[in-house]
Length: 478
Image (cartoon, rainbow, N blue to C red; front, side, top):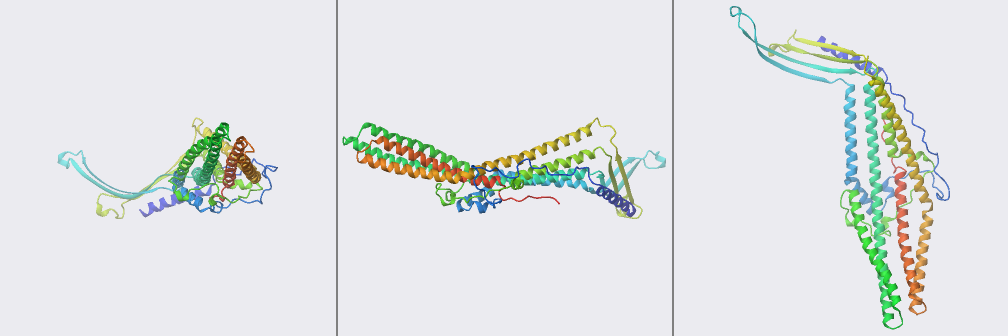
């Protein structure tokens, strides 16, 4: 028995040594050159960019207590993120399953056989039936494939790269949840502001309507003034209904991305809410920062997996060696199961050489190479998409400050115009048409200011997202 087990161990050790001593047929990996300019665009739309820097982690970008609380709730409750986390666990399990094929599977066995067999002897020579009893204990290695040409190692490497790609996908989904939550929260704040502007306009318009009615009743006004005053009142009422609906829908959208009902204490009041003020995210002078984006890392990991699959496809052209062995004891008596002389063993190596397979191996290699070309194109497209998204965000960042300043100036000018027009109308020196025009101008300017404030906030969120959200290079294998 000891001799058999020693031979079994020597055979397995030799197989592992041979399998580890030969490198795989996987082509060497070289990162494709990024098909984008080294620097982001420059010009009037981009303004003066900050020194090269990537965004800080989200807690340093979204500093308001309310918004931070909503994002933390989303990270713990988002169903999309839970799916991404589960996918990482599934990919990790698949990698471990594939890696197990690198080692032989050893099974322990124990069996007992009881039988009544016909002996075939005439009665005068003995019993016609015999009772047969047999006990055995042992261990076996079932068809272990020696990885002589690296097929299993290539498949294991491919599974590992897919696991890394899935992990990068989880980080990308987390980034999407953070940015999406911030965007939906700011959208709710914007519509709350628009609702308040409409309510204020309604109150002011109602005062003007009451004044027009009083002047008409006093004989110093006209029915046209009353009709004009009613237009701004009815418009404000319609907008109040529209924005009330939008606020409710914004809350529903926020609850969906968060994965739970957001408490009222964490909701924004309007765009003037202190928590709605986001710090400016620095831009980046070089496009190299985009290579750290989780989605770009994911695409590169998938490219590495495609390279490993080429090695597995090439190994299919070469012979494969399988080892099957077992050892143990067999006896007819349970008491003598481990007695000297009861040991049994067998060792059966098998070599398989591909002779004719109808072109299947060639087709498998062609398929692996085609998948590699697809992965290269997808990686390059991911880099190009990241560059376009960042350039677009930088184009907004370069002029948004001047846009906000100009829009605020328009609101101030429109407010002054309304104040002067109202004073002239009150003294009977002008018609209500000028007041109505000033009211409409101010109303439109206030709405545009809120929209511009939302664009500015969304731009900060977008820059945080497109520049990678403060993530590093991700998990890499040595």
